[in-house]
Length: 251
Length: 328
Image 1 (spheres, helix red, strand yellow):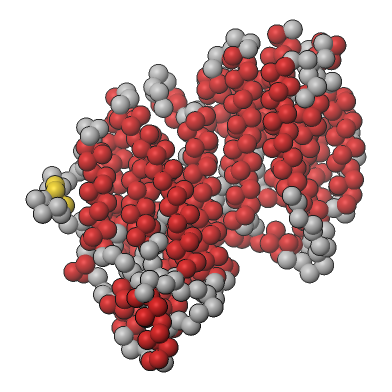
Image 2: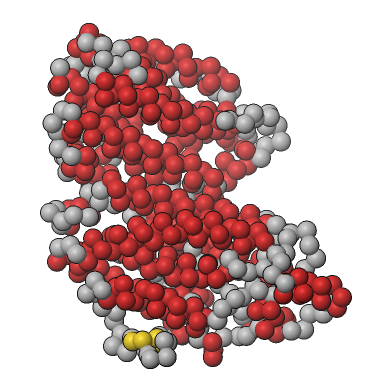
C-alpha cells in the first residue's frame, strides 16, 4: 500500500510545487497590480500544499524531508503532469491553465476528504478551503474575459484549445490506480475527470467559449511516469541553482 | 520601500513664489502646527498637493520596481522556508505600491497617469533599485539593509501631515518590520554558514554599501532646502539625520557578524554622529538620470508588463460587461 500512497502523494506534491513555481513568475509583471497579488497568493498556497504533502511522505511514509524532496531530486523522479510544466506564456494561457487545473485540484481534494488514509484526508479538508478561492479567481476572470472584447475572447478560446489536451493529461493513471480505489484511498482519475468535465463545461459556456473536442490520441501523458516536457529540466535547474552552489550548506 | 523628499532646484524655487490665499494658508498651517491631519477634501496649497503627489508617486513606483530584483530570486530560493517568505515579502511590496497609488489618487492623479509617467521617465523611483541582485546574498542584504533603510525613512514620514499617506505608511511599516526579520535571519545564516556563504555575503555588502549611503539623498549641504516642506510636515527629517540614524542602527549589527563595510573611515564619533568617506554624488545623479546599471532593464520590464497586459485591462473595462456579483 505504501508504494501506491507514495505515488499519489508525489504526483500531487510535484504538481503543486511546479504550478506554484510558475504562478510565482507573475510577481511583478501581471496585467495589473491586483493580478500580481493574486498569482503571488496562489503561488504561496500551492508551494505550501507541496510542502505539506512532502511532509506526509517524510513523516508517515519514511521519505526524506520536504526540502530534500523538492530541491534534490532528479527530473526523472518528478511525477508532475506536463500541463503544469508549461511556461506561463501570456496571461490568457496562465488564466486558462489556472481555471482547468484548479477545478481538478478542488475536486481531487474534495474526493480526498473521504480518503481512508487519514493524514491525507485531514490535509485535504484544509487545502480544499484554500483552493476554493483559486477557483473563484479563475472563474471570474474566464467569464469576464470570455465576455470582454473580441481580442480577449479570441485569446481565451485559443489558449483553451491549446491547453485542453495538456489539461487532460492531469488524469493520467499510474500502475497503482486500482489499488488506490480498492483501498478507498482515492476514488480514481476517471471519477475525477468526469466530475471535472461536469463542473468546467457550464462555466466555459457561460464565458461564451467552446469546449474543445477531445481527441484521445492527442492527450499529453507521460508526466506521471517521469516523462516530461522540455520545460521541466530548466525549471528544476533554476529552482536548485542556489542549493547547488553549496550542497551541504544550510540556507 | 521608499519615499524621496528631495526637491529639485526648480521645485524649490517655485515653492517660494507660488501665491496662496493668505487666510486659507494660515488656517491650513495652524492645523498642521496643532498636529492635525489634512484629508483629501480639505483645502491645501497647490504646492503642497504637488509635492505630495510627487513624493507618494515616487514611493509607489519604488515599491513595484523594487519588487523586480527580488522577484527574480523567488524561483531560486533555496528551501521552502525562504521561498515562502520571499514570495510573501515581494507580494507585500506590490501591495504597498497598490496602497500608495491609491493614497496618491486621493490628490487627483490617476494610477494610470502615474504609471505612464514612470514609463516615460518623467517620474522617478529610488536609485537603489537600479543595481543588480547578483547572488542569493543580495536578497539577504536587500531584505535586511535596504528594507532597514526604508523603515527609517517611512517611520519618519508616517508622522507627516497628510492623512491618507500616513495611514498607508503605518500599515507599510508594520509589514516591513517582518521583512526586516526575514532579511536579518537570512544574513545571519549566511554569516554563520560555510566559507562560500560568508564570501557571497561579504561581496554583496561591498556592492550595496554605496547605494545604501546614496539611499537617503545628497548631504544636507548639497540639497535644495525648503523650509515650507518642513513647516507643512511633508519633509520631517534631513537626509543627513536619516542616514545617521540608519548607520547607527545597522552598522553594528553587521560588524557583530564579523562582516566588514568597504570603507576604512566608517566609524561613530564621540558626538554620536557617524563618519564615512563621502560617496561619489555624481554617480548618484548619473543613476537618477537613467545611467545606472539596471535602469533600462527595470523600465523595459515594466513596459512589457504594461503592454502585454493591456488587452486584459481593456476587456475588464468593456462597457458591455455584465454586473459581477462579489465573489466572497
